[in-house]
Amino acid sequence: MVKEPGKSTLADKIDRLFHVVRRPDREPYSNEEVAKACREATGESFSTTYLWQLRTGRRDNPTKRHLEALAQFFGVPPAYFFDDEQSRKIAEELALLGALRDAGVRDLALRAVTLSSDGLDTISDMIDAIARREAGRGGPKKEG
Image (cartoon, rainbow, N blue to C red; front, top):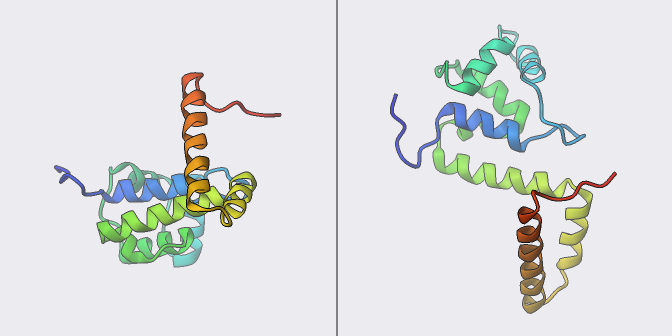
């Protein structure tokens, strides 16, 4: 199967959900956790192996109920799986929400709300400079 430029496969879309929708402790959900929740939601067979196959593109024709269960688990509309434009928008929103779960990011965002346009530009430039510096030394330094 040849992938059209700009098109996301079902596997891409499912895998993206695993990357941006996280457990409350910010760890990714496992295939096992998601498959179990989908089994419970549908009352149908939904194995960890089947989910892995969907996620890696080895299977690409799930039932409507399976897609609805995945959508419900990850908190997205079922259209996420069928409409590439909707999928892209939803993924961007989920990434933003995921970032805002981080207390430090949320605190900065809330403090930035009152800044002028020039102030926001200055903060943005500072963040870019710090990101370049951290990228040069192999990533952000972890505390603790």
